[in-house]
Length: 241
Image (tube, rainbow, N blue to C red; front, side):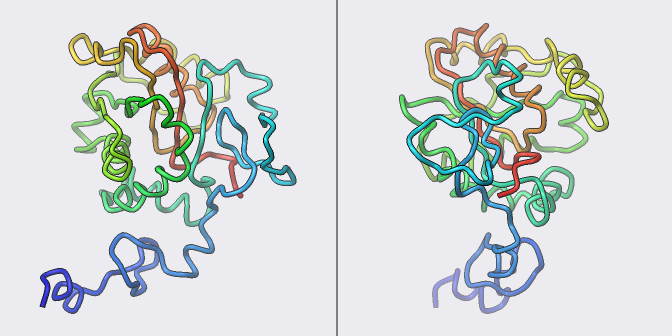
């Protein structure tokens, strides 16, 4: 008997969300899959927000928010809306030591971000400040990058960016306050940031709300000489499918 089969016999795989028995590791059961707001139809081409009522034709689609804000990147995608099961999965990954969520998200990110991989880009995670990293013990965005790379074979640069200062929480802040809070807070790493020069980059994070964090990271990549910038989030606030 194969070791994996034996392990499954003793410890049957459980749904990432509800704990029900499922057929394979790092999976959702049928009801939880149905309750997860995956963004599968038309979406904003800059931030990935689902656009109900739109059709995913050949034209470039832009949401109202991205019409109002100049985005320093050229394309963006998101796997799911930040609601229901999607929200619980992200919170488990971010605050609940549930690294298995990142393992499950690898194929989801690969599907959602397939067109962002043109031009052999680097996958770069949004960095955590060292103090927050010490408390959390891992960077959830780096876990997502590694999981996506294991599926796509894309090159990664986990330490290319760094947090230059410890920013207060974004919770409860207005859109403008979020951008002000993150302004200048991310920069290229003095040693590892050299990998960004002349490269297309896909920035990866767990959640996009206003886009302020992605904007700060994009500016840092530009400073380091990156050419084409794209963004990919596991979940998009307001992006319910």
